[in-house]
Image (tube, rainbow, N blue to C red; front, side, top):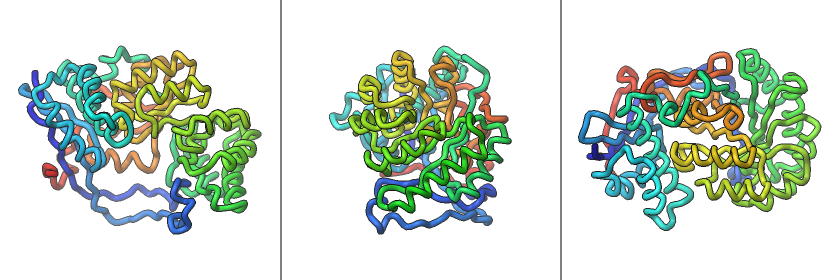
Length: 392
């Protein structure tokens, strides 16, 4: 079997957003500049909206192919211009060799956007391998270790007003979610008022969810060490399961200082690339939870290596939930002690799977492992209104 083409397709259609209440965005790094820190609450659009998505498909000289997406336009450009010429004619089942060679292909390519392109190709190759052997990917990785994986409710985009957030938190707890993650809106440039608003959100959620319900928070790299230290000390009495990305992950020394400042577990990983960066965080004692994302950190091939590394350091691995399927398959192949759960972005997974059938959602806080061969990603022709090949 040989790779005959690597196709990038743009798919268009329409969808109506589910009936979510108005919400807020999270704190962001650019918020230090006032022109980027405006508060614009989101609102639901009741009429159908145009939506597009980009997918990569790897074709072979046999009937089997591999599919992955949605991916970003930047990933698609790099795949077409740099990775496609390299992949043509190669054995698609030799995923370890192809991954290692892609990692060595570009001297600037072991991090950032180039790695996200490598990741998408690797995931598509694992989808192809599963289809070639007529098995779900988790079986090729040694699973299943369980029939379903717990999913925590990731509440990006919901209101951070304490009363509104508390109502929603109870609603999702009652749906069966056994853990939730909420996103802080305010950072250092929002002053004392923003700091107190962050604390009020955390206290309101802890009050309604009870003292032991797993509750996490995300700062999306929007803070600095002094601000994060103040927030960690305020969160310490609230029994927080983890604080995610208080600062950018490459600031390893800052994480070490924060971890020493308060007894609140720290997590990071979605903006970390490859096992070597993860090892630096673990070896320095900087974090308590690893959160790399298969869409960005090297695909399925690299994620299983990072799971082994996390296991060796007795540190749980819980993948970031940019998309769901690759992380779900890896989780289904790992010990529940190593990978206790996956992330489910409540507001955003609906749009990410709008062109798919089946759609994978939690039921009672658990997501069943896919039964289809490969990743289980299938495009639904009934939802695709237009499809065209991207040309760069």
